[in-house]
Amino acid sequence: MNRFLSRRTVLSALAAVPAAVALAACSDSGDKAEAETAKPVDAMKTAATEPAAAPQSSGDVDMKELMKPGALPDESMGKEDAPVTVVEYASMTCPHCAHFSETTLPELKKKYIDTGKVRYILREFPFDPRAEAGFMLARCAGDNYFPMVDVLFKQQENWVMAENVKDAMFQLAKLAGFTQESFNACLTNQKLLDQVRAVQKRGADEFKIDSTPTFFINGKTYKGAMSIEEMSAIIDPLL
Image (cartoon, rainbow, N blue to C red; front, side, top):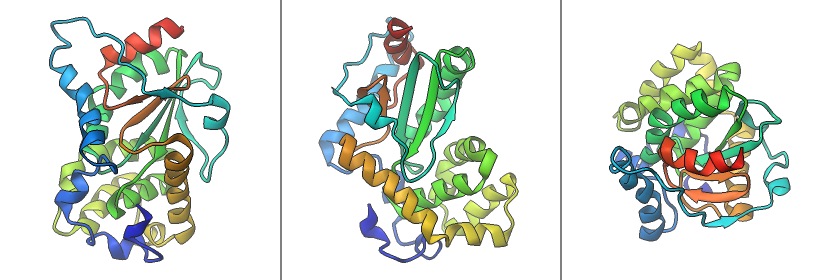
């Protein structure tokens, strides 16, 4: 992932990766990981007619290690002492991540996060410069981190596929109060870029993440954009 930019700023490299490639970036390990990512989406098609079974975990991680502070402070929703902790590693240009954000996260928030049952943490795992830029803007948005992420996911095709991606991103950033000056300053902030990359690198090195979205639910690993029914099947027995 770092191979794309070296020390060049994100702002000057936004057009370096073809839009179609960026929009398909949910995996860094070939067809196998992409297939794993797609399975839960396929399962959603039958969710209306069959009770969802809990997806099988692909492994475990040490929760103490997972929750150690990283290069950037965690952005979270929900009570810190909630009985269940959900950590999602996502990429801003991943369609599966956008699907989860649009369809499952609102229900997860209503049913579990807002009721004190789940603490949800989102961590950056960008696969390309456009994804890095999206996360940087969210971080620069301060208290509007999650609203900025939400807008970028909802408008994903519009800015990722835009011929002038910088202008498309700026138009969205203005909704969060960015000026042209603050937009440029954010996307030329080398320290922030290095921190976003460090979060991604730690996820890959320590927790063996190779596709997005990847979830850790009380230490168990799940790959793919799960439905609320599938997440409920995992969460409910932990409450």
